[in-house]
Length: 234
Image 1 (cartoon, rainbow, N blue to C red):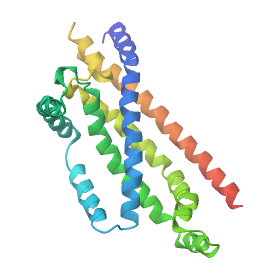
Image 2: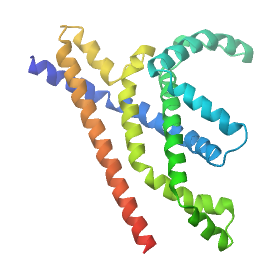
Image 3: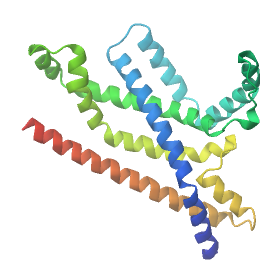
Image 4: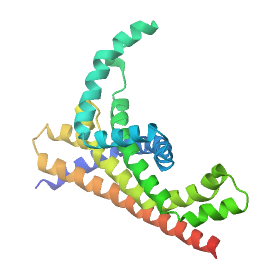
């Protein structure tokens, strides 16, 4: 094994960590926004819309991320210029930032899992807390956003950490839509001397460090939130 080239690839991978984090974090926060909305719709069983989201989530979870990336890439490449003509703009796919294709696909994944995590957390809150809030005159909206939702979000922190690590690892597929990320950068480097083992190993090391940091951070936040919950309950 060429240790020197391994170290070189690690340095290259580290340079692309910001792009990987950008893809993962942006997709996560987009998923968090839409996931909360979908979770509330399904929790309150809004007629028709709840069923629609149920089947949509089931369908999108059945489609591989790579396939979602590829399909959206092809759709955007074909539709962008005609859409530009409709609105009187010269939109060309060659000038389109491919990162948004990656973010869109990753956001679908993120939204699905965030929605299910929050919905499960909402269902786990005892009905007695709703009854107690109503007994002191709070409305459903006040109870939800002042009492129930903060508990659901706190209890979902470990799951959020798992979702974010999955997004970080899933971002390794974005090379399929011409985005140079952590993994693709070391593959390009390895094309010079064909030392792909060292390149893959370097990428694996950097991914491992990233995911380990995220996992420990989510656990730490979970511990802090649980301590605060105990303090307030006492």
